[in-house]
Length: 498
Ligand SMILES: *Cc1c(COP(=O)(O)O)cnc(C)c1O
Image (cartoon, rainbow, N blue to C red; front, side, top):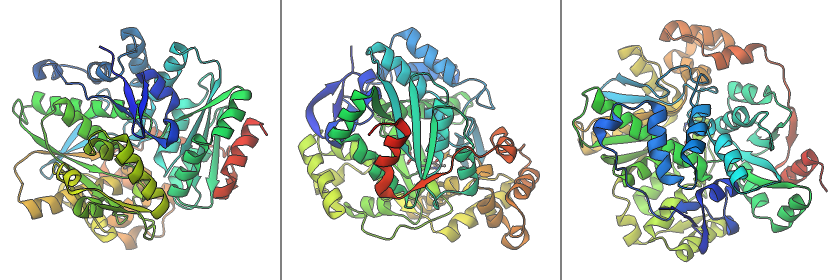
């Protein structure tokens, strides 16, 4: 049976999976959502024996029903290969009573690789299936990790160009170096004098600018998105929750059907929404623990039912979560509004106009399976240091936010027995300075970034990842910087259109 996708802002818009992937964003700024969440009907004993690739096929075929078996398997095999430095793709590490699901073994050492290594293949397959002749222009805003993962995924992919906007002063030095050294004739990287939300709003504006879309069409281009608003990114993220659950079962850590908690360091709400979808599919998940840093909009939302972005934007040591508008929350809002596109549109309009909205108490009741909280910068550093001192295991600041919120969850709820999976979203090598400063500020303050990398490798007894070795000597390829208002002009210049 074919699964279709609706727009969260227009009840009449229905498209196939491949069309939803191609378009990225629906008209009127809506997001595509599956009409219903398919059930995971494979027996756990069978899942337990599967490789990551086999699990990916089992899960994704349920969502991407207009892809043939061969098309989907080709995409999966092209994505999850030697680009990952471990055959397991997403290994589990037990430390301090929790299970860290390491999602950073891909080519850019952050969890974005889990989806962005497959998205270019899904997208080019979708273009072929829909007889698209235009060149596809991937327009992406990044808080640091999406940009590099998307660039790496799309570099030299025929029929595509990729343009990435990032906050010039809002990413880590290693993140910036990774992006501006990207090779590939079809890649473009632009810093903006602004924050991530401004980059994201600028991109969304171009997507919904009918005039611009027409101009593009005339020049043989069409936009698509590599941001987590693209359903082609969300679906591959469901896979690793199913895979991790099956591995916990295979390793004898949990019984069949035993419920687990999942803690996710959250920014744009994509990763945790994938966990929610996994739960909807039937994966035994108890609580979805949504962890924020000091930009705690989501914590406030879960506690009050009011989403309010009117506040200062704080730059933290977990920059990929420095976000005040969590785009994917819209998919959850639409759902708890009873799949009511009109109601959802009203709320999203209120967000654009007033910077806030409030959900009804009936909607709020449906959020019980979520637990939200946040950690301060000091707590995040303490978590990194203590975990390292107690176990020798080193985690990055994003993962530490989740580990910190999980601690708080246990204190508040006394729910200590339910096994808990913590999504580990970046390698500590990507945020070396913050991690080493957390361990010992005085000792490491005077070292250069690359000296710190070697020191981290020694302390954690982990080899320096290839991704870091590469940028040590890489040449800078991109140096465009602009104001947020100039983003459209920059895109036109790059595409040589008026
Ligand atoms: C993107 C990112 C996050 C946030 O994930 P969302 O899906 O946007 O909520 C957390 N940690 C790291 C390292 C990331 O790159």
